[in-house]
Picture 1: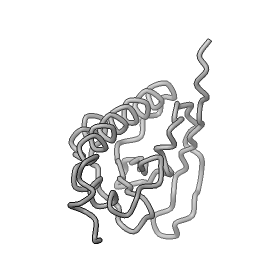
Picture 2: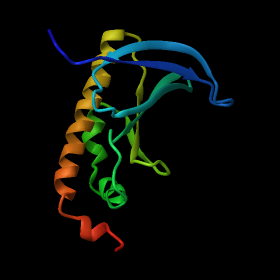
Picture 3: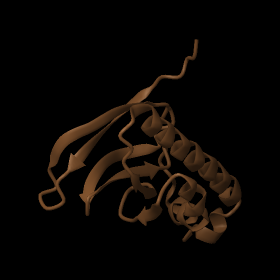
Picture 4: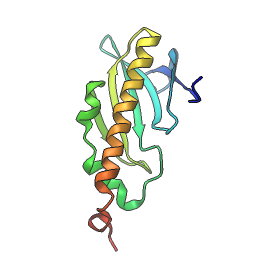
Length: 141
């Protein structure tokens, strides 16, 4: 038996004008033991339902790491499972917004989210390895 605890992600349809959630589209069991998902929601965009998943680092980064993580993170890695990936500034930790079309099949959505998380985690591991010795380049002191 697997000891991984599942996290349940509920994707709600959000009204573009009001910002209020209107209805639940689905609940998905994923393994996110690293806390890489900030939140998820969907928007109706011209007849297509687009899912937005905000991905983060899963841990608090040091001040110097914030810019370094953004500088070395390659969104193309995650693009294998997303239509777009954009940086979102202003958070305490780096955040990327991955967007893809909603799939009206629970298992297919779970697999899509799982693959997205795997790619994101793989990229983060690579970034942390790359920036490990770059503190002096990013520190103000």
